Image 1 (cartoon, one colour):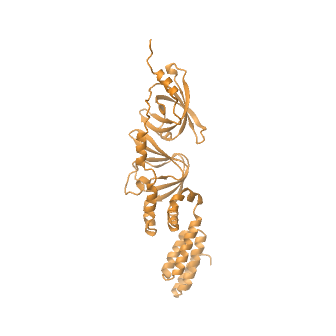
Image 2 (spheres, rainbow, N blue to C red):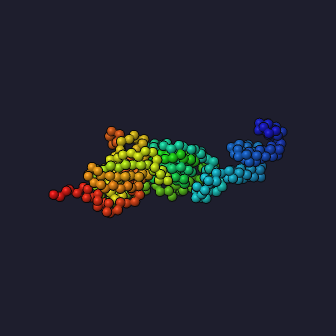
Amino acid sequence: MDDLSEHEKLIEQYLSEDNKEAAVQLLAELIIKSAKDRNFEQAEAMRDRLFEADSMALNEIVKTGEFIETEKNKAIDKAHLDTWSELYDSLEQVGTNALYYGMQTVEIPADHMLFKQGDICSRLYFIDTGRLKMFYRQADKAILLKTLGPGDIAGEDTFFFSDAFCTTSVITDSRVKLHVLEKDHLAKLNEKTPGLEPKINDYCLKIESVADLLKAKSMERRVKERLNLPGKVIVQNLDDEEKPVEKPFRGELLDISDSGLAFIIKTTQKSAAMMLGRTLNMALSFAELESDLKFQRGGTVVAVNSEPFNEYIIHAEFVKNLAPVVIDELEELIQPQEY
């Protein structure tokens, strides 16, 4: 009688005959089989049935519960456990299983908005693989706050509050794999596993907050004077291995300092947004000033300003500051000529 419905009929027969011992024995066997087959939802349902059949069968109730938890723990994705070892180390086995099996696993392609600034978000995102960008929009300016990767969490700034609005936007920069925890589901898990929610909250409190990121960005102004001078910037997008991707494009230099520059391009809103966090190789020339000065610099896009007529100002931070001698040469280009 391998068919579950046949077993259920037999259990009902035992109970109708008041043969609780036989019903308990069969239920315990079915629970263990379901757990071994990793059909944990069925195993839990059978265990609830065991309670109903004979709440005094404490030995079977305890043993089947322990067996389910052990099998659940063995079935957890080890790569996920390694990525989130600090979090899971703070939980008991029951809490580990409750959290892991209480989440959904999702894979999302690149260029997908996970959530947008101003939205109400009731999810907590645990990043297993891939890369995402967190940015903050202020008027027409988008500021890159952080590049997220494996072991990072998104959504924690609003998750533990009721009806809180997202203070940032997060977009995928590559294909990502996430474990997603719903706020409503966590409340249910916490009823069965008291203390789970506070421990997850405590873990999130250790993460650098959005407020801290915004404060840091407001302090990261270019300390050297920005030089406003015309120039051409040939821009090449680079991949993670700093190899060129896509075709290079031209921008018009707006200003430059020893630590970064700003240039303007014509493009679409989506393409401009996707530049946030990108690594660039930038070749600068100053033919308009009748100068032979040319140099290249690598940098990362840290902010994007929207301008009229599909123009966008791209702010990039250099990987390595310009040498003082280069700054001196740039300053000479904008000095009034003496006759």
